[in-house]
Image (tube, rainbow, N blue to C red; front, side, top):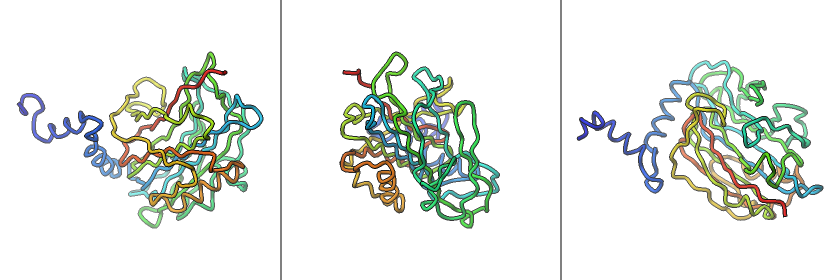
Length: 295
């Protein structure tokens, strides 16, 4: 049966890993093998891909939402000379994937970051290279510049910004879904994705979780993307005062910086956490929820 249907036992193991149910943790073996293989193929790797997305009602207009984002990588290192590498992709779009025109006011989490790339520099460590920002279609792409190979060139970097009143809270004729994304643009051991939600936004407390692969393109909504199986689930950590994690040094202090900058009380927020080991790349972790009707 093995010879006729799959060829050999090694292929059988891959098929069983790929077809496992969510309870059986599909792709566990394949994702770990892919991390090691992609590290060698692409010549780059990192320990943790960090994303923290904050959503809260806007104080001046309850029909709008304030958004904050902190993104980063820890212990990123090159295994061979790599002139540039994409780190983050900042995109905003409507349900039909058309470009959404920003209507809010963007400010940096770090008040000393006057403009892109919005680095939170006192949380960036190691041999931080120059960070380049370029436009790719409707999106902004952040790229790490050249640097030494191996541990001498290792670095961690974080960026972040706050958008006041940038998106609608309620559904309209254009948009019915809210989506928040953590893109995986390099081999990493772990994705840490926190969705930090104001308690008033009950509609966002149980978001759907999808792992989207990009076999042909990096554009989330383009043709050719595919939904990948996964076993991970979000964990409700309770009040956003309890976000400390051994995965990321000083992470709780970084999150506290966002609350301080935004003027928010962390006790009014809940933290929904996803930890995904050895995520595939290139891929996107997507959290989505249905926008409520305006009462």
